[in-house]
Length: 404
Image (cartoon, rainbow, N blue to C red):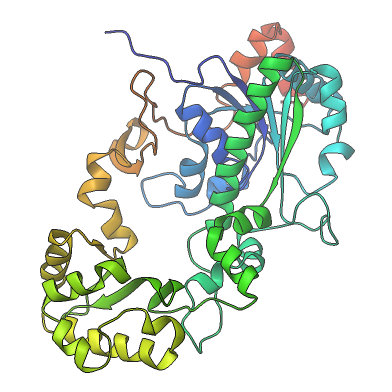
């Protein structure tokens, strides 16, 4: 049976990128059928190849962020290697890099140099702070993006110091925005025949991720309510999403508004108790911090009488949005996650293991994503050079000379 090609079949990418934000966009493109050539340092490779290596398996970091791509080793300080890069760029649709600002230009593969070779090229550049501003030249990391972008407050506990999180939210958000920006620029290049430079940053991604909550914060000129409950709207049109724990300490969340408050609390059997403490109307918590605390303490006691599955079941039956609060391990085994292929399994023949990995967040009816594994260092070098017209003798000479 013939296997359908991905929706990005025919797109060719050359990536001189490392870390997470710089590699995930191209791994996603590889999932969807693009040919992605990852350039690595001969004999060393991407430093993340040795990061988070588990016994009997390769690096979780490198595998997650570089699956499905081809590995080409080039010493870009060697003019012969730079010439190879230029030949690849001439054939490519996309070039990506996340070097420290200015480094790509200094080393001969900045946007101005490459667009002369291929005017239709989409050139993606990722930085920490963005291309402008007082700190534009500084290097960036996920922790820096989280620290400056407001995400720490999103999960803050009142009265406690703000902290960045364990998940690379800034890296991943920047990667998705880069992916989308590349596709938009590819569409434009296809229509006009002219490529362009697409610049994204860790900080810019975090700001976008804050969404309407940031808009509300700016318009009100005050920080949002954080902690156990998220309060939105006004006293006459209130809305909340709130977290509670059952009698065993298992957390869950629900989201509702003023219109559904009475029905939800009645279904749970709590409404009479809430009326007794002045919470017949949800709107009072918007203007009164005291009533907000009363609501939380009352419901803490109520939900501690039963089990999470019981409460979630009742709320779902009442058509209230609710769900258990999963740990990451629980999320990886969630029935909806598995049913939709958001987590899948791949075979690692070299290690004789089949393990869980990220699936695809998209479902295409005609051109499904194909999940691959990350390449060994330089495994595609000879084939790529051969396709560019280099003979076996020339490839051997390049290798012996340290160019590849």
